[in-house]
Image (cartoon, rainbow, N blue to C red; front, side):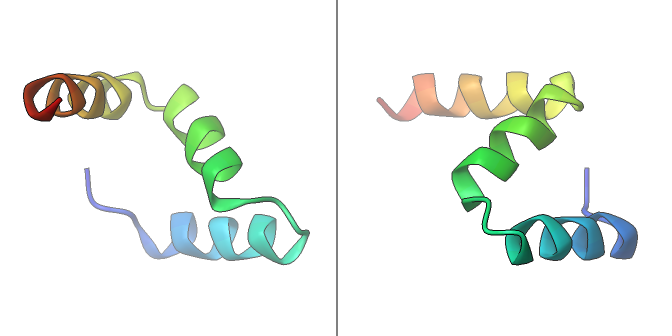
Amino acid sequence: RVLTKLDREFIKYLYSKGLTMRFIAKMYLANHPQISRTIKESDYAFS
């Protein structure tokens, strides 16, 4: 799923609050399980 403009604005906002990208990604993926699953599978494939 491609990030929408709104998603990018939201991430920029969180980042400006001092949250790490790692934390933002973790939180974002928690809200988008299908992305999380895809990433886990690719991590597994390349490990």
